[in-house]
Length: 151
Ligand code: 58G
Image 1 (cartoon, rainbow, N blue to C red):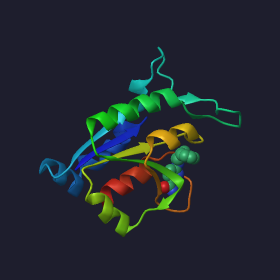
Image 2: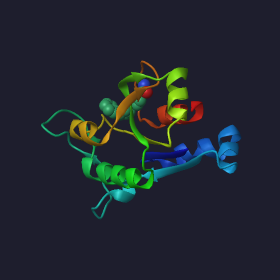
Image 3: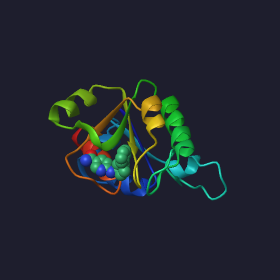
Image 4: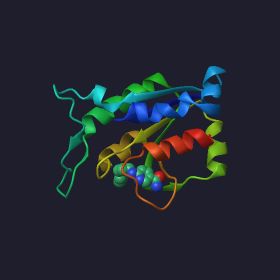
């Protein structure tokens, strides 16, 4: 299975497959795991990844262009993969879903930061939203790592 995690903190997520059983799975080629830095897909000179929300509102959201470019790249790299956004509003992740996901050719896990992700992006490039539980984290990374570890 091919796992791609889209994040602005790739080194944080990569710690998961640097140790233990997940590392063993990668070494034995049962899993290929890669963290892609969304910042690398930002077209501007300063590689900005945050943006003011479309249509107004408080706080900042993920800038849609870098995230969309990273998603398109990931979907070309891992054909047939399911694209999942980690979100407190998603379907509750459990062992049955872990089993279901383990049968897929690939997983693309999107980690939001700030106050969230543009709704237009969720409609277009995301297959589903998953939540690891009823609490809000500062980013989707811990949730994505939980899903990868269980799968
Ligand atoms: C809408 C709103 C979309 C997962 C916020 C995305 C992620 C908890 C979980 C976001 C998360 C969970 C912003 C920060 C989601 C982003 C991220 N919090 N319970 N936080 O699985």
